[in-house]
Image 1: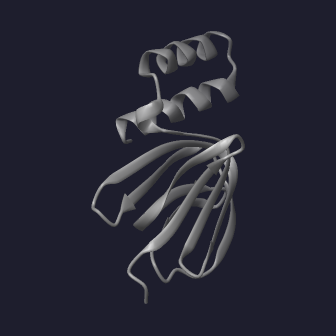
Image 2: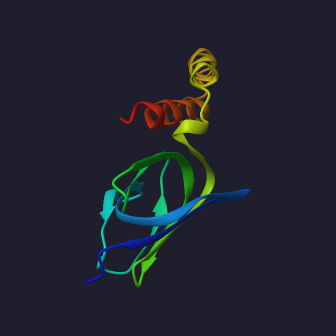
Length: 124
């Protein structure tokens, strides 16, 4: 069994992150899933939620992902997202304002997106 995964996290408009990892946790339509080296091949639908990547160097990369697909085979994991941004790219104050605005307007899609962004930053 290989000791690492090759990861590609891609949004519709850009490549967000790529590298080697030992574990990836993502939210799918079937629930949260953890993928490690040697995992069975899979194809699934990504739900909005934080994606956590534990790199081979021992660092943790967190991204806010909003929809898309996850695919795994031969220790290569592809996360193809409609929208994705790394936690360190997120403007917390802007996300908090967006969350409050979405709650006031009862816009559940915008509220979910802002909430995911804030959870990615806080590591929840």
